[in-house]
Amino acid sequence: MQTQAAIYREIDLELSWSEQEMPERERTKHVHRLHPYLGKFVPQLVEVFLHRYASPGQLVWDPFAGSGTTLVEANAFGARAAGCDISAFNCLLTRVKTGSYASEALLSDVVRLAAPASKAPRTTSPYLKQWFATRSRRELLAFRDRIELTSYPDLWRVVLSRAARSARLTRHDDLDFPREPVQAEYFCHKHRRVCRPVGEADKFLRRYVRDAVQRVQEFSELRLESSATVIHGDARVVDPPEPVDLVLTSPPYPGLIDYHEQHAYAFELLGLERRDAAEIGRGVKGYCDDVAAVLARAAKALRPSGKIVVVVNDSRGLYGAILSAAGLRLEDRVLRHVNRRTGRRSGEYYEEVLIATP
Ligand SMILES: C[S@@+](CC[C@H](N)C(=O)[O-])C[C@H]1O[C@@H](n2cnc3c(N)ncnc32)[C@H](O)[C@@H]1O
Image 1 (spheres, protein in one colour):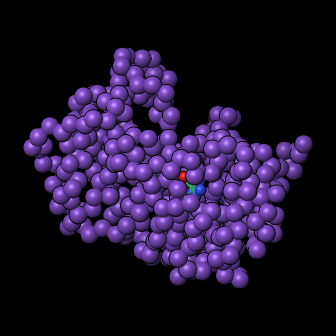
Image 2: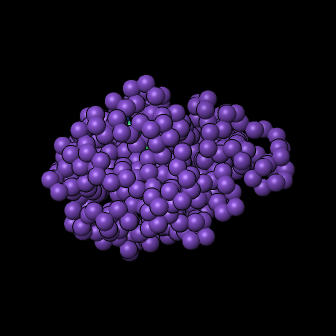
Image 3: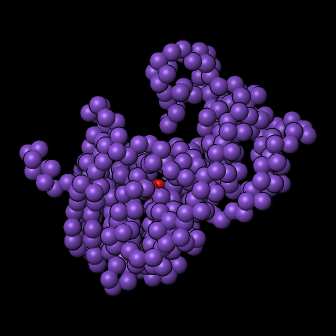
C-alpha cells in the first residue's frame, strides 16, 4: 500500500486539475459537447500529450476513437487525425465533430429544419413506441424526415439523437442506462423535486440545432488542420490509412460501460447497424488478448520515433501483461489525479497514462 506522499510524488501535476481549475464548460468546449458520451477523455489531457509527443502536420491514430476527442484535439493542434471505433454511432459522432461546414449552407439547413411537417410520420418500432411519448415521437420523426432535405444530414442526425436522449421517458437522474420508461411523476434526485416525464421533443430540437451551429463554427475557426479519417470497424483488424507518428488512445475497460447500449435510442432512430458482439470489454474473458492485438497492430503502423500513449484506470492491474503481449516496452507511467466534483470524495480517483514504444 503506497502512502499518500508517495502517490503525490508520482502524480503529474500538468495532468491533474480540480473541478474549479477546469470547469465543465472548458472540458466540453466547442464540438466536444455535441452529444453526451459516457467514458470520454478530457480534451485538455489529449492536448498535453499532443504537445509532448507530436508535431503539427504529423498523423495521430486512435484505434478506440469513441466520441472523437483525440481526433478533434489533433486537428485543433494542427496534426492530421485518424481513428476507428466499433460503434457506428461513435463513428458518426466523430465524423460530424471533425467535419467541415460552410456557414451559408448551415443556415439554409436551419431554415429547412424549421419547416412545418407536411404529414404525421408513423413508426412500427416497438422501442420508439415504448420510450417516447406520442408527441415527442411525432416531433422526432418529423425532424428525421426533414433531415433528408439538408446539406449536412449527419450533423442533424447527431442533433436528432441528442434531442431524443433528452426526450426519452427516463428519469432525469437515470439518463445513462435507464432500465424502464417512466410514465408518471417521480421524485428526481438530480433536481431534488418531483419531476414529470418529458412529453415533447421540439424544444430540445430547436435548442440543440442552434447549439450545434455555434459549436461547429467555433471549432472551424480555431482548428489548424481539417484532415480526419474515421473508420467504422474492429480495431483488432483495422489499420490506419498510413504510417502514424503518435498513437493516443483509451481502451474500453472490462465490465464498465456498454458503448452500444448507451446510445440505443440513436441506433434505433437512425437505423444504424449494431456490432455489440465485437465490442471489447464486454467481459474480462479475452480482454487482455483483444487489447494487446489492437496495440500490437497500432505499433506496426508506428514510425520509428513514435510513441503509444494509453490512458487507463487499470484497477485490475492488467496492463503490464497487455503491453508485453503487444510487444511494447513501458517507457514511462504517469498518474493523473482525477477530481470530478470538489467536495465529493467519491468523485476522486487516479488514472494512469502509460507511454510505450515497440
Ligand atoms: C474508453 S472509450 C474511448 C473514448 C474516447 N477516448 C473519447 O474520448 O471519446 C473506448 C471505445 O472503444 C470502442 N471499442 C470497443 N471495442 C472495439 C473494437 N473491437 N474496435 C474498435 N473500437 C472498439 C468503444 O465503442 C468505445 O467507444
